[in-house]
Amino acid sequence: MDTLGKTITCLAAIAWKKNSLSLENVEVEPPKAGEVRIKMTSTGICGSDDHTIKGIITVKYPFIPGHEGAGIVESVGEGVSSVQPGDKVLTLPVPQCRECSACLHPKGNFCEKQDLLPSSGLMLDGTSRFTCKGEKIYHCFRTSTFTEYTVVPEISVVKIDAAAPMDKICIMSCEVPTGYGAAVHSAQVTPGSTCVVFGLGGIGSAIVMGCKASGASRIIGVDINEEKFPRAKALGVTDVLNPSNLKKPVQEVVKEMTGIGVDFAFEAIGLTETMVAAWDSCNLSHGVCIITGVSAPNLQFSLSGQTVFTGRTLKGSCLGDYKTKDCFPQLVTAYLQNKINIDPLITHQLPFDQLHKAFEVYHAGKTIRCVLLF
Ligand code: COD
Ligand code: ZN
Picture (tube, rainbow, N blue to C red):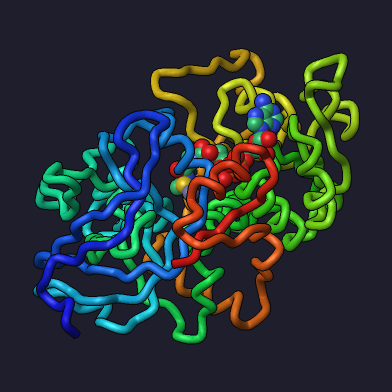
């Protein structure tokens, strides 16, 4: 273990300012008390990473992006007991401290120690473990997975089954719980129900998978990029809609298609107009609308005051409402037992140093998930 207790110099992606990402040699300090240093094996490119690089989710620059990660523990700081060197782990975009009001409550998962909204870009002690060219580099969600080595708090990492395939399993740290979990856990989609999913990217595709697994009889997929339709249909979408080609608002079309509106609507884009469209697509009486996307800061949306009292539910869902440290290893085990098949959610795999190519393919709308391999 010649890296133990030493600063490691390795390759990492740094966003120096909005929309500027470059590969650099970065110094990664050893973990302090209560922290874990991880050698990354894979990381996905999630819509949220694009949001942070563009500044739609507010972060501090310069920073190392990435939150959907899998790796192997290189070393641990004083007092760390839940993982040890050599363990296979996932990074947790929202931690589970087990002490705050959110963690102690039986429902919900938005731990008060999260660093997503708002983002300090620092570890729990208020300092950073990354430097580049003499400059302090900020963390992202206390995960920063676009680097060969990262340091995270113990509450932001969890050990998973040693049999997990490390070139794929990173999507269990965001895409699968966020999407599949929104359907099976947050909404609890019922057999025979009707669903609409706004956005058929990585998260929307995982939502479709969850609706299908729950026995939904009709799943309407909405996207402005028709290239997403064939894969969505393969995952279980029964009808597709491109809002750009419709003569009336998409929610009107959804209501006509289903008679009165769907039982479950999901938003997986992060735009306030599609959040409202998802709400308006729901059955007035019992419809459930789940929002997984995050909009740009300071944006608001309004709902007709007369359409709320009828009984519908509007609910946000982050990482499927799963208590992350408790539940993510169970999702991994379910995959290993062939109870969930995550393989169709990964469409591209590229070496980490081809990060720019990976973002090109993502921006061209070609991917469901592109996974970077270290
Ligand atoms: N109408 C219909 N479809 C649209 C529109 C529109 N106006 N605009 C874009 N789309 C489609 C795109 O063509 C694409 O297919 C899809 O929407 C978006 O997919 P991706 O692959 O770009 O993004 P995802 O699926 O990886 O992420 C989507 C989120 C909404 C989850 C994400 O961007 C987000 O808001 N994340 C914040 C939530 C969060 O932080 N969750 C937990 C940790 S990530
Ligand atoms: Zn994500």
